[in-house]
Image (cartoon, rainbow, N blue to C red; front, side, top):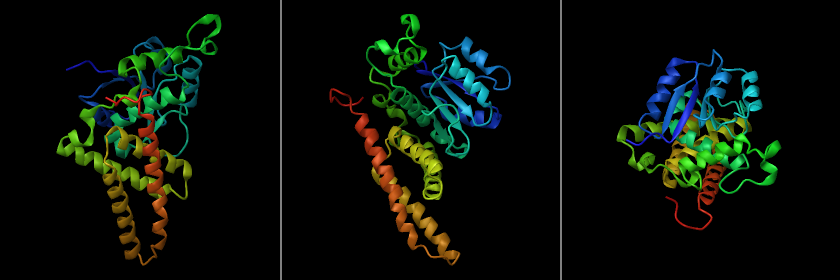
Length: 277
């Protein structure tokens, strides 16, 4: 088996969450290394800064001072934050959020985190410009990391190097069912917060779309998940004696999902127009 492409520093405090994360990363291209969040994680990450490519963070495992110290040291890595989808930013604005009951999507979330880091960080393939250089002409750490990620995942970045072995159609029956059930929970979170908590809804939307893209979820299956969720809400409201006419407004959520998916596929087309691998 080939060596893992990415080494992930895991700042997870809850052993049960760590075990589940290990389960869903096993056999993939991500290798998880635990860093004790209760000791001195900043010093450990600084000492091994050339080893780690991304962070796996448990919400609340470390405080804001740790994130500030990492930022001060230039250790702003692609990050997946595991915890409640509150809509709040934990570390930086390119982080990806994943609830603890949806860890089946972890490997896809890590791919998305790397992609967002490369895209939103203002760095990517190509030559470094003069205004990106640190004082003295030294290349900044952020650009060095981006270059390293590009080299490991392909010149054009992770968007163009989706792992086909993790496409929905190529998973085992058990893993495929687990992933679909996890996506259904994500979509339910999206609908529940869509009109009342835009920030939380946006995190759920991004989580669903990220996994849909990296797992090559058929559009028809996304529509099916939407319809099943709405049908479930309608039955529950009927049992409670409530009106359900307003549920048609949730078609906006499906349109949002489709628009975001189209945008991800648009960005995945290489600049020269050649087919993605």
